[in-house]
Amino acid sequence: MGSFEFLNSLAILHAAQLVTLAGAKRPRVGAEMSDLAIIRDGGMRINDGKIDSVGSSDEIEKNADDAEIVDADGQVILPGFVDAHAHPVFAGDRLDDFERRTRGETYEQIAAAGGGIWSTVEKTRAASEIDLFEQAKKHASWFLKCGKTTVEAKSGYGLTGDDELKILRVIRRLNDETPLEFVPTFLGAHAIPHEDRQSPERYVDLVINEMLPRVANEKLAEFCDVFCEQGYFDIEQSREISTAAKKLGLKLRIHADQLSNSGGAKLAGELKATTADHLEKTEDQGIAAMKSGGVQPVLLPGSVYALGSTCYPRAREMIEAGLAVVIATDFNPGSSPSPSMLMMLSLACRQMKMSPAEAISASTINAAHSLGRGDKIGSLEPGKFANFSIFDCKDYRELAYWFGFSQADSIYVRGERVCSGGLRPSPKN
Ligand code: NIG
Ligand code: FE
Image (cartoon, rainbow, N blue to C red):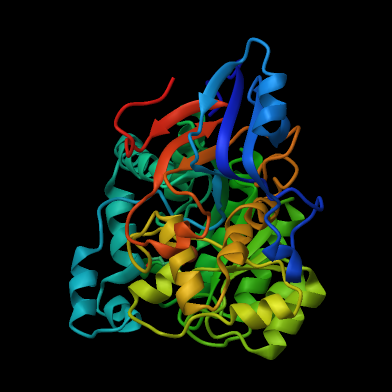
């Protein structure tokens, strides 16, 4: 969003619930996740893209001066969702995999038969940077419509130096040319490419000695991620890659314990990674390791649902252990083809026993902290960017209750309305 100008003055009035998530300046844990700091009949004063004050509509209206008034008309306002785990840049789709899954084949069987991540890699390698950008721009417009204003974006469908950098440059361009903020993550260690099937060590070496230095030199990523899993990158390889990335100044995220309890969460704890993601198979030891390493768990219920599994991660135990849980979409063409945070809220509440308030903390303030942006986004507090959505409902719990469509009426980034869901046919003045 580099080229957008945000120099406005707005007074937002009459939100039935202004869900501020005001609170401690750190990720929320335990009972804090249930405290959304809601202001009834709330309002906000916004100057130059930032929140100036938050309070009752009456107070805000009194000090509105010459600000443009936006009447939220009894709807619900939330901070823009922060999607802390997504793979938005790829070519094509995985409709054939999807159909095979409907016939009962598993993710692993489909990958072994030539589908899976590898089939997306082949298409992504063949695509030009321009074509990839065009497809990713479409994904970005879906994200906005769902009420997301910040999205983490991983590479990982190139698996050569040039192709991984091509994807990271597309991510940079998305950040510059769309209203969304994209946070780039290098995921060269997403799969062993077919040309290195017989010599995986050669590929690990390439990631460490060619790709990572180029990524760091060109400042194309803030984080490094590894798919730590049997048949992908084992614990030792994941440790080597992550350690090399850390030395180059990248922060760490790890795809951990998705298909098997292979020690990924423990490794994340040992390396003091920022996040460990997935965790469907993580047990007590992994939870304890994340706690002692200060790791935030990023739970991805969309991938469990779309793979037809019922093995959801143990969100309750993680919250009870005091971990600052995050919920994200894992948007990708294979295991989680959904851009919708609202769908994730529904899954979190119905399949992972989280309350609506916990799920909202996990997809806003905690997600923002997991991306190193907890001081700028994730809650509606003075000094933060005015990134928020107005939803066509009266109670925030409706967001997780009604499912299968977006209740977003309009989305604001830095005080600018960037998207209208059009649920209310004639906009108010
Ligand atoms: O997070 N687990 C590895 N990576 C993705 C899936 C990517 C794909 O299937 O294309 C995930 O689920
Ligand atoms: Fe993923």
